[in-house]
Image 1 (cartoon, rainbow, N blue to C red):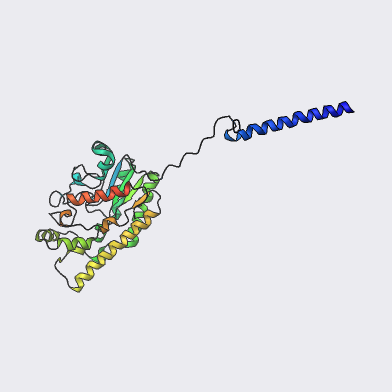
Image 2: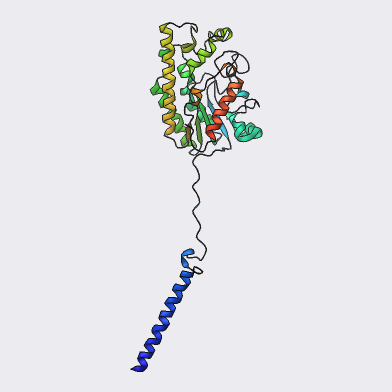
Length: 301
């Protein structure tokens, strides 16, 4: 019996020593299994998620109206896409595409599908042209011509404006799920009237049919004329609210927060042909606004 007890104590001592030895290794940290994966290699930290918004897209397609075509910036009643804020090559403008891609890159990886006179109803067709290029960024500036009609009653309704913009974004998203969209606000047309109405040449060009709902009878200040212009302004503000709201439903869409609407175009920033469309300098200011929003870490409000 004594021999058995001695043997039992010896076995117990061996077991206790083994347990204490294992605990000693863990507490020392040299061979702790907690710092290793099952395969014996160190556990790796999970990579940070890729941001949804790419601040340096590698290609740009522009859609919209006469502003994006550089209308009246170089010569009267003519497009001048080389000074376009979005895709132009003119050095003094330093367009969004040039700022993002460099001069050489902009020449081969940016495309301008905007059309003078275009309204929101024309945007789906322009988007269709743009998606064929598979751009990483699409710029949108449209809405002025929806308000610039022969009369206030002919302006595009807010409901139609919304439906057409929603369809445009949906068609883009179906074709290009990861393409980003920068949406510029509609300019303050009443402020443009106030800036240009003192220039005789500008008013003469306005009579050729430029934005009659706002610019007709440019010198009239009676209640009817004031009400007409305020009606146009109200519609522009409603369009901008639509652009903001619809863009907010798309995680890869950025609205400019009303930056273009708020920008105070002076005489240097307006065409010296019609005193309504942006001049080359005005196009450069639009490029600055767009670049600031596209390259911001978070949406600029």
